[in-house]
Length: 118
Image (cartoon, rainbow, N blue to C red; front, side):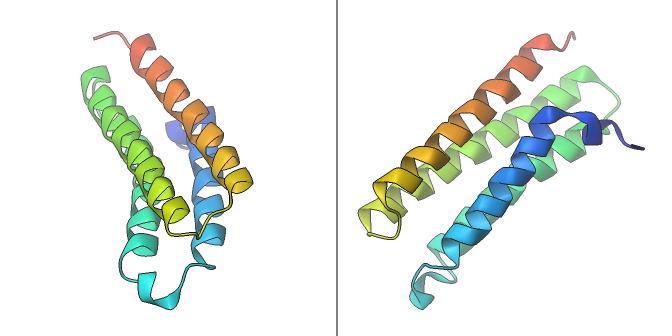
């Protein structure tokens, strides 16, 4: 693999999350197309893309900054999940699965941040 991010497990898991989100929002009502489903997809994509963008930086400090943004985007997805659950778009079992997946991803991103030396 040619780029640093391609070997990062955290990036690979973030791609899996985006796939899960894309599948989930396909079943949302049409009137959510430009609101919750769009917001959820953008936040999910942001996790992956910030990992990519940060990994190409020149310093660990810069990488940490982008990883922090990725973490916040992952938490935004959790917020969207709660909204979707309250509106009846996500069943409890799927909510729990995605919540756990995001929780693991956030922990991995934080561990990567902690491992980087300034």
